[in-house]
Image 1 (cartoon, rainbow, N blue to C red):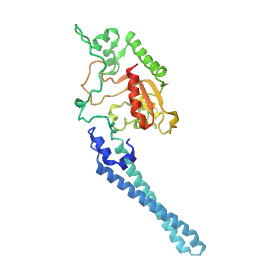
Image 2: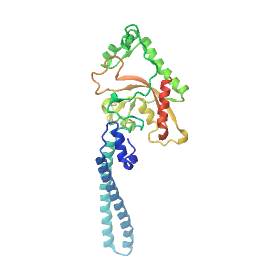
Image 3: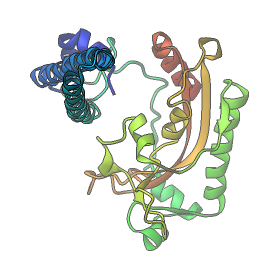
Image 4: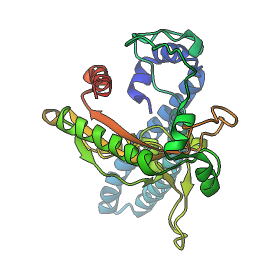
Length: 315
């Protein structure tokens, strides 16, 4: 969710940056919600001040024997209590509407990101190496992998399309690659290895922005025999759980950066990709990944991003 203070202090600038990534921020709607919020808050403060003032008078009136006036003041306080309850409900409704909307708004692009309407206008930052040329007809990973244990038909038999069974040397390589990446990040790059749950609550996915925007891309589960438990979700990446290990916490600056890594399966429904990239290990519903996360001071976040790119490239 975007920083509400940034939105309030510089709405036009936020709208301009969001427009660069093709998002039309409704400033009029935001201003209207803010005006409603401020109005209710002002009303609440006025009611609280009146209640406190009148409450102080009640004891004095009783002491002076002015019981009818004291009763009238008590009736006023009772009415103010009702009005405050209504104001609290109004404020809660405005805040819920604002929060639900802000959760659907994308992050601001970095200042260095060039504008572009779609991927055709992406700018190539750098190229490493030169694509090889072959004097024979090359095979893709499907043709190469099937004789070695990459079994797409077996995955479809068990779970449907976009699932894969690995056996033998391919399964061993799959395991070894994850171990290699974990060892590299922990022993060479200073990350702390984690093992985290694969099933999380909706609030966890809100914390990293998957909900509510990408609900269709998630697998959800219910706990058998426990009707009191709300719907939970299979993680689309360990970034979700690693990032949320510090959710709701204040990390002392001297403890930063926190470098976290984990190996986990990832589950994605790939809604909207029907018929796309159906051959091979592209757009799988289940795949494994070694994730890196750094918790850093906001002013150092872009440098941390570049460092993590380097860690991935030099593995």
